Image 1 (tube, rainbow, N blue to C red):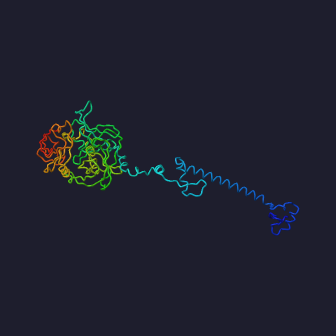
Image 2 (cartoon, one colour):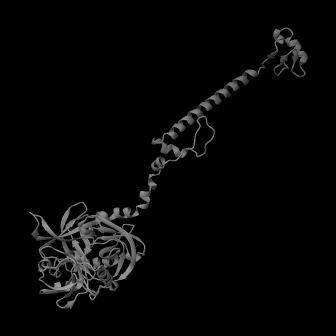
Image 3 (cartoon, one colour):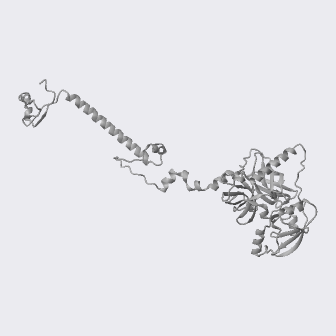
Length: 449
């Protein structure tokens, strides 16, 4: 019996242990086990083997339970789209789906789910590039109002005689605008600058360049946020641009377009005495918008809104030219700082009109319309167009009206607004030849000192 190393099984009167049939018969002869159909006799090692199998079963059961628990947890987190933990767990979940008792299904993308998980790639954020550029610069644009302290509308309200736009170029209150915004005004007038937050300051005109139509205004305000000046020399035709300002006294107005030309010579526009390569754009620039910035998509100023010829054709002064003007003005201020009184002052007399130089294209358009008050005779080839007349001004008292065309002053031809400014720098009355509704009139204006 000591030689038996394995279990002996006696089934149906036969011993199924090879070579040990006789021993099996003697072993089981005296017991009743041989009467059963199937009998198993465990060997001495069977107890240990059974223990190992039990441990294996336990480990398998524990592993299966842990797997089911983890799977159920991950599925719950996966299906919970509104949970903040989803953002942390989702990257850890593989994109491969296998057999599972929880029947995972591929999530179907809907507009709702895409908008929640991909907010950063919405169409508004991708394609509203002009709004992004405007957001960077709009708080640096100012509204300029010229008021006459001697004229009051009602009570203490001072009458506004003209307005325009400008933008901040330095932290200490320096503002750049057009010269025609702050010139041609009475001595009693004041320059009021209103910031985007609604605060108003009285401004002082520091320097004027009538040739380039640029001016600098200073307000007593520090820690301002200056606008970023770009490079107009890098500008290309077809670039998107936006014009900011206050056209027709409507503050915070934006118009957009493209650059039509980067070098429109002043001679092409009929502007004599100027050597400026203007930026032409189809972004609308109207009266009151003058002096505001023309910006690119990076929010940089590449031009100063100056004038419009007709719908879709507007012009801006290149910012590179304005940079040179600012440098010269600062140098002039430093040179004159030691003198108590500056040798520079605005000596022009006040006329009280808003003028537009008549180019050949504008004349052709006015002649083609042929309706009052722009009924222009075919023989008119030059002059200035009176856009606005300030109520109570010398021009208003003399009888000038919006729509008039001034062709001569003191028997001399007038080709641009610069010619009118020259007469205002002198003395004496101005005898004007005016075209109104196809008829010629003589009007004598006495400019105000």
